[in-house]
Image (cartoon, rainbow, N blue to C red):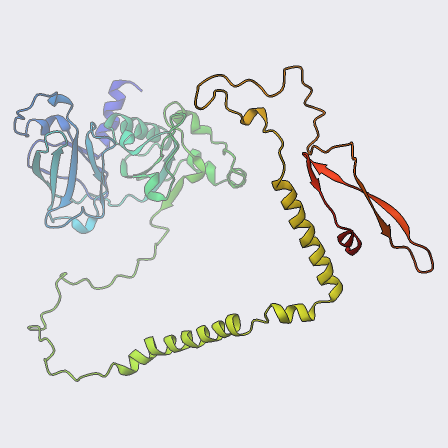
Length: 438
């Protein structure tokens, strides 16, 4: 599209673009997109000089907008500023209910480096338009655009030019622009230059073209239900700059569709009715007895806890059987077996205390703790340590003790030989009586 054609399309659009240059009045039309840019460059000159050095041309500036006398903006007016170093934008579609009533917006600019502020007022005078609203309205979802990118006059003009080339209306207006995040969309991942997406609603005075109605065909509806791209013949006229999701396009004839008006409640002035002065309750209040509440909340749970504690103490302290009762109920053979195991355990422990085996080389000190001399190893380097037994015993037993061994009844007793063991040179005596008992 050449520059002359673009100028013609922009002239046909009733969208109002204005710049913030002080307290000023703007005159948007009802039902037509209104865009107001808050320029950072202008507000920089409003801040007083800052004594400390710094680059004032790149100061981070944010804006706060609200309806005068209220904490927020009107419901139809939105505001966006992507970063601290970008311009702010006020946009929305003025409703016809506010025609003839000026709307004053307070704009406060904050310099995040110097903490200075500047304030201006924007007076919005909504004007009525002929043939409002336009009968045929179409809403497009553009996937490769953010709302602040779509609000730029050049981009919006290119889109309206493409729509007018497909639709061929005599009158075409941009009605509203809405971010996909305001419709419940998700924030895109910061990869592959993904965009949030934006809904653009336009209105015209002629019926929808055949190209726009192609999305309503059964074939394209089936493809949309299967999450496939529909086949639209005029998509190539948008594809160069705008990636349109044709499955989300909405075509509405407002004269054929009569939307149900939401139930509205009568709105008051916002002030509570005057009911006179506040009369506090008299000081002569009736006394209240809290003893019953005390019994319910404290005494009863404490009594229950005490009873449970007594039962638990009786079960643990007064119901113990004792060692004597346990031994009386245990069979004699089990007691004898337990006694023999205990005696053998004590004997092994006493034998282990009498060992005189040399300590391993890893536990010996390298140097003498007093003289500081190097301690020689106990065994030479050629000493074979792998054949060293865990318990050193003497194989040459000189002394032997013979004791009789009990045989079955009717046979004679025979003598059995018990060797006398020596552990590390210490003899271990075993009595004949003990051997018989075992």
